[in-house]
Image 1 (cartoon, one colour):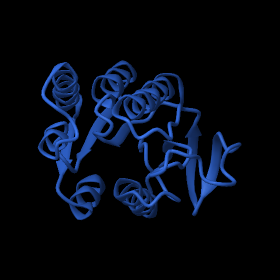
Image 2 (spheres, rainbow, N blue to C red; image 1 turned 90 degrees about the horizontal axis):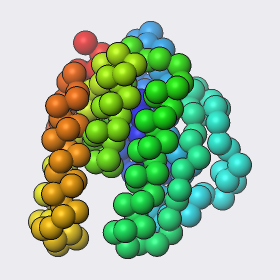
Image 3 (cartoon, rainbow, N blue to C red; image 1 turned 45 degrees about the horizontal axis):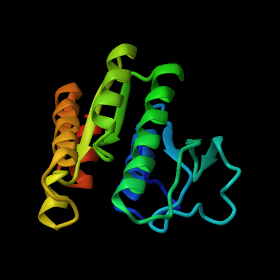
Length: 182
């Protein structure tokens, strides 16, 4: 499971990924979570976590924390660069780490679309995308982004992501858990 957000962060995707990982492990799957250091929502690494890069066990699940750029600036550019940093680092981890038969990831950040898609294609791993929101359209609708080059680039990342996935699961935690266990 590759996810930018993971507990102890309270982000919905992170909690959902932890529950999915526990469910799959209980069903006999060999599961590992690939994520970054916890920093959501403030963009500051949580106290006590700054030196915890690498492998560990958290709540009975193997977790690999990657070194990525983290930004406390709330601007779109700094957040985008931090998300791109995670996407590139996750791609490198999938390319050069232990090969997984199946990689499960939320299609957020959108940069994961082409990068993780390419890594899974090279490693011949099936890629399952979990889609909760349609981005960047949701960001445009909320007024957080304006139509332009950046939005066109993000839509391209989204389209490439959809094309590279063996499966796309949307809707709810229940749907993701049910589909992943079947």
